[in-house]
Each structure stands twice: as structure tokens, then as C-alpha cells.
Image (cartoon, rainbow, N blue to C red; front, side, top):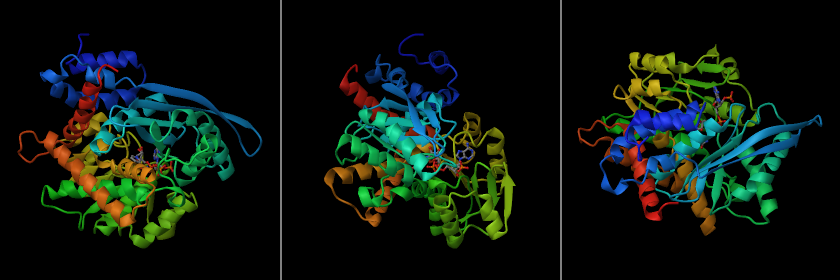
Length: 449
Ligand code: NDP
């Protein structure tokens, strides 16, 4: 292979050879490289810097065993990782995921995406991701606490407010963040903003819980506005019923749309009358407080539950995948298009496979997660700023800033994704190049490190 590599096939062949078996990571890089390689080509300043080769190699991956004791006294051992991908534009930043499917490939794909997402927010945050194959589902609070304390006993060496600032993700919500932060504070002997997503009582930001879900809907609003359209009266299909999905549903209802689905790993509910404010409050209580299953919604409100199915066959105007990666394949994408979908904004990270993306791009307004779900990390960045200044902004102030950031990300996508100025924005290209340029400039200015 010649350096720097300018041909996508050769670049990807090299990457696959160096990272065997890491399909999720390959797919995430391929999506970015397909836009960035042609952009770099012929630009003198990027010359022989091999920027994409450097950016696809994490700064470091830390991996360790987490031993903990369950309520029956059995000693259990899980695996944990922190992938510190790039701190070119700021301290490492990215969530922790607890789910049995977690492995190095998934964390590398998420960490790589995070570099570009964090850059798009305009805030000084590098890219990282971490987590464990520990499954909090069905565990008691005490078991979760013992696991979190054991995990942090190793992790605390590698993080800190100027070094690496983890947050939540799948399986890591308010409870887990509290336990992780408590142990960090105990080990370090100081109270610093080394984790975001904290409770309001101990340094969390107003509006952080809502930020990702609200941000996705704000981004959708911006996309529809380019077609002089709005969310008012639109039927929306949403997947998931976790943090992102719940607040995506909330903002959709506030802006006059009619969401008709929600899901979990058991299946989805279809409520043709729409999930309204009261039903959403019930659903939040089910999922956040009672840790129940989505089928209980169908029993409570007398609608259909589709076991082991995904909601993409339901007629809708707008779609919001908010559960996990690869939940929309090519067939599902084609079904959505056939049913006259207008727009799709990703709440989850890489919920559309590469083939689904190809089907959607150009057919509907399509926002990739690194742009549309950046609201969460953006408000995490605002939490870091408040912690350093020892101030707390109001919920209204944070929401105002969140809306502004989502507008600016949309503007960046327009700047780099509509280069011929015909008004048709390629949001994938816009997000990839818009996220890349700032990181690339930082790398160029910092020399060969
Ligand atoms: P939660 O753990 O709060 O919720 C995840 C939801 O997705 C649950 O309903 C869960 O169902 C469902 N789910 C998880 N795995 C699967 C699976 N393999 N198949 C079907 N359903 C599944 O996570 P979040 O809401 O925080 O995260 C959702 C997505 O959004 C992830 O891709 C995450 O990376 C992304 N994201 C999150 C951000 C945040 O601020 N939280 C920021 C940016 C992106 P069940 O309970 O049955 O497992």
C-alpha cells in the first residue's frame, strides 16, 4: 500500500487485515473513509500526513478484568475496556456501555464515531468509548454497585477532568453513573467533574438526561425546515424505550407529532392512537423506576405487542431508531421508503447498516447518528464547563444552548454536504467531512504525535 492511501478499497483492505473480525469497526471506518479520502486527495496541506491512517489507530486501548461478588456470594468475572481514540481537540470523551454484546470491535466503532461527533459539536472534546460485557438487567442494586465500584477501582487511573471524561450509554444510566462517581471520588480523594451524566444533586447538568433524545428531534426539525416542512401532525416510528427513545418521544409530542411505537429487546408496541403525554409518563415509570418490559405497555393501554419484531414495517412519515446498532437492514430501509417515509434521524449509534444507509441516502432526508445524536455529548460538554466554573445553569439555558448547537451541526452538514449548493444535503458526507476538518487541523498543528 502506498502512503498516504487514496483508494478506498486498498485502504479498507489494509484496515481489515490489521483489525481482523471487527465488522462493526470496519463498517464505521468505511462510512467515513468513503467521504474523507476523496476530500483529502489533492489538498496540499494534507500531503503525506496520513491523517486517516493515524485516526483509525486508537491512541490506546486499556482492558482489564472486573471481579465482583453477586448476592449469592459467587465471585463473578467480567471484561472491561476503555478505548481512548483521539485527544487531538480535547480530553477524551465518550460513554460507557454495559451490555453482554460489548466487545472490542463495538467499542472501537463507537470510539471512532465519537471523534467526529464531538468535533461537530464545536466543543473541545476528543473521542473515546468504554464499557463491559456485564449485564445490569436482572441484577440487584447492590450487585450493580459492587460491579461499578470494582470497575472504577481500575478505571480511575486513566480518567480525570483534563484527561478522559466518561458518561453513560446503553445499560449505564443515573444509577450506574452515581456508583461509578462515588467510587472515583473515594479513590481520588477529590470532587472533580471526571464523569458526566451525574445527578443534579452532585454536579450534573440540568437537561443532560433529555439532551440526546431532544437533540435528535431538533435535528429532524432542521432537516424538515429545509423542505419548508415541520413535525406538526407527522406520524413517527421510534425504536427503543431507554434514555434516548423516551426523550425523543417527549419532544415529538411537544412539537405536535404523533409517535406510535416504542420497543425493547423483546419486541415493539404499536399504539395507532399515539403515545401521548400521560402514556409517556407511565412508560417512563415502567422503564426507569420499575425496570419493566415494553409488553406491559400493550397490556396497560390495549394495543398490539409484536414479539421479537422491529417497528420498521409500520406506516410513518418520520423514523427515529433509538435502540442499538444495526437495527435497520437494507430490507427494513426499503420498506420504510416504500411506505413513503420522508425523513430518518438516528438516535442510536449506527442503527442503519451500510446497505440500509445506501438505500436511504438520496431517497429520504437521512441524518447519521454522529450528527443527529450529538446533543447528549454536547450537554455533557456543557456539564464539564459548569463543573470547572462551579456554576449551574438553568434547564431553559441548557435547552437553549442545545438547540443552538444542533442548528450549528446542521449548518456544518449543509456546508460540507451540499458543495454544489443545489439545496440537496448529503448529511452523511456533511457530517463526516465537517467532523474531520477540525480534527485534521489540530493534528497538522501538533506535529507527528
Ligand atoms: P438505554 O440502555 O437507556 O436503552 C437502550 C434501549 O435499546 C432499551 O430499550 C433496550 O432494550 C434497547 N436495546 C438495547 N440493545 C438492544 C438489542 N440488541 N436489540 C434490541 N433492543 C435493544 O440506552 P440509551 O438510550 O442511552 O442508548 C440507545 C442508543 O443511543 C445507543 O446506540 C447509544 O450508543 C446511543 N446514544 C446514547 C446517548 C446517550 O446520551 N444516552 C448519546 C448518543 C448516542 P432492553 O432494555 O430490552 O435491552
